[in-house]
Each structure stands twice: as C-alpha cells, then as structure tokens.
Image 1 (cartoon, helix red, strand yellow):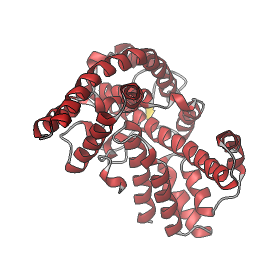
Image 2 (image 1 turned 90 degrees about the vertical axis):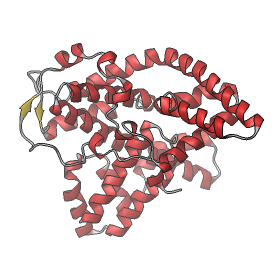
Image 3 (image 1 turned 180 degrees about the horizontal axis):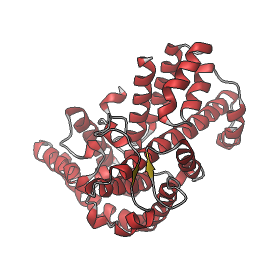
Image 4 (image 1 turned 30 degrees about the vertical axis):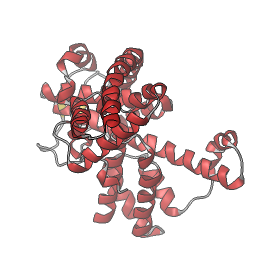
Length: 331
C-alpha cells in the first residue's frame, strides 16, 4: 500500500507551506500568559489545525476508515481499549460513527449489521473509559509540551520568531529528553489544541513555534524507531530473542551504516531550515541523491506504515518524511 493513500497533506500544520506573511521578528507574549488563557473550550476538537481533520475525508482516507472499522468490528472486546487509545481522535470523531452507520445501512447480511451495531455501542463505552483513564496522561503531556514551548522563549520570557538556532536546539533538547511513551497521541493532541488556540487568537508566531515542535517531534521519534528497527533486524538475523534486541539498541547507534543512512540520521536531528545545506554537502561528498531518497522511502515503509492507520503520529511523521523527499529531489 502506498503511503500517500494513508494521510492527508499537513504542510500548513508542520510549517512547510509558504508563510502567509514575510518572516520577521515579532513578540508573541510570555508563555504564562498564553497558557493561563488556554482552555479546552477555547479549542474545540472540530477546529483542529491538523488539515486532515478539517474537511470531509477523501476516497482514500475513507478506505482507511473502513479498514479501521473492519478491524475493530472483528476485535475482541478486551482489545478495543488499546486500539482506541492509539487512534482516539479518529475513532471518536462524528465522521467515524457516521461511517459505521452508513455501512450498517448498506449491509445486506444480518450478522454484519449486528456486528456494526455492537461496535458502535462498544466504542461509545470504550471511548468514555479511555478518555477517563487518559485525563492524567493528558495533564502530564501538557506539562511536557509547556516545557518544550518555554524552551523557545528568550531570557525575558518572550518569544522572537523566526526562532534562533539556539532556541530551536533548546526545544530539541527538551523533546529528546522525553521518554518514548511520552511522545504519544496525547502529546500530539496537546500541541494540536494549543496550535488551534494560538491560531484563533491571531498569534501566528506561536503557531510557528508549535510547528517547530512538531518537526522536532517527528525527527526524534523517527530516529528512535530506525534505531530500534535496526536492532530488531540484527537480533532476527543472529537468532537472538527480543531481550537481546533491546540490548542491541545502543550498539546499533554505534554500528556501521551507509553514507545515505548516516546523512538521513543527521537530517532528522537538525532544523528543517538547514536541510538543503546539509543535503548539498552530502551529495557533493559521498552520498548519491538516489540513495538518500531510497533511504527515506525505506524508512517510510518500515516505520510509518507500522503506525496506527489514521493516527496523528502517522500523519505528522509521514508528512515530515514526504517533505524531506521533496527537498532532496529539488536539489
């Protein structure tokens, strides 16, 4: 399955689209003022800044929704909480339930109709339970997002955008310091809500900061996934078990890899504004453009396609890599 069928464009969300105004130094106000003014009521879910959640789904996206519905309808009841928590924003959307109802109306098999009806009822109860259980998680993620945002501020507590290299690296340090379980859907939901609030308030500078946070998030989690994948492959080849694979994670970081893989790893850990310069350096030395594109596409297939279909994580990370391919091919 092609990756392009799974996601909606997120260029505006990730900050890759051309800005609506010329970049300039502007003051966005202090973090505490923004945070104290923020509430969930100010950022309704239907106003999500993630582009794929602002409109009716395309035929390809509808196919993904149908795939999720089919898998969930065949899942055991005890499997639903975990599946729902991984794609809560999609599964809890009115459009998802509307599609279940449409499929139930279209079904000619009585058993299929009953199965879809039971799924809708089970999802309502499961979503309520998951939301209740994740309230504490959302609070924790909000605190972590706040730390990332604060890292973008100057010494006086205000923000200057475009962000300086020092501020971007400070944000990166905060994100890379977070555990893997912290960089989840709740983390992305929080950024989505804050980005929406900033957009509603006309704080374009704060929207840029949130976009930078998403870019850093993407590079960080993709890099970690690549390292773990390399360790798992090494364990499989050597016949070791999963415990041995975990032990190889750190070793994989130090292992030999191709020049294209090394360059991709570097690109995942730098500001996206520096991509072109680093790509040119690599191509002028020992990296072939085709090899670099192939390495990115391989990462898409091995990492992105393994994520929950329709999840924020899949959408954001896929758009990040697609933009990288576009930049490489443009050189």
